[in-house]
Image (tube, rainbow, N blue to C red; front, side, top):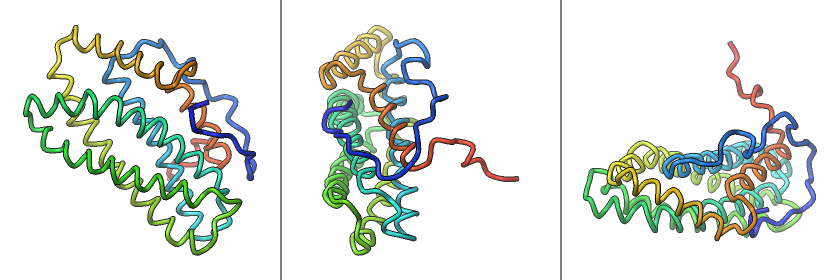
Length: 225
């Protein structure tokens, strides 16, 4: 399930939500290239939510978060987000076209690329400090701001891509070109993830991580009256 995402036994309780549909049950498999990019952002936003919740808990107690939860989340972000979504789609197909047509979205491209680099550095760091059986209080002190700053950066990053960069990219393409790229993206996904459907595998992995953290019940996050 996702190359590089190795399973380790969960150190905290929580079963996955049996009522939550799998990605394959949500609707037709065929999606446009733009929809594909934005739903992948949805997976990554779920990872950012885990990072924020973990940071809140670690600030109170360094033993409150099993390190394997953060390791699995970082591995997912690396394999699905950085190695696939960023390198093979955005950096190969989206950003070059946006810069070529010199529209207002072009001004964001260099910043987005720099944030990709910084994000990979932080992912390296998260994986390096979550390899053991516990997170020391000293490690937690440095890890908490790393998780929070990572999530903050990617909140802004994804919002600009979804509302400025992706729409500009889409308008630079004809309908036939967009359909061809949608098929191309599916080929790239199959090549990168092999037999697994990359998006569906990532959704299932996030469900497992959220269950381990006790985050599966969406009603918990409804703001009270």
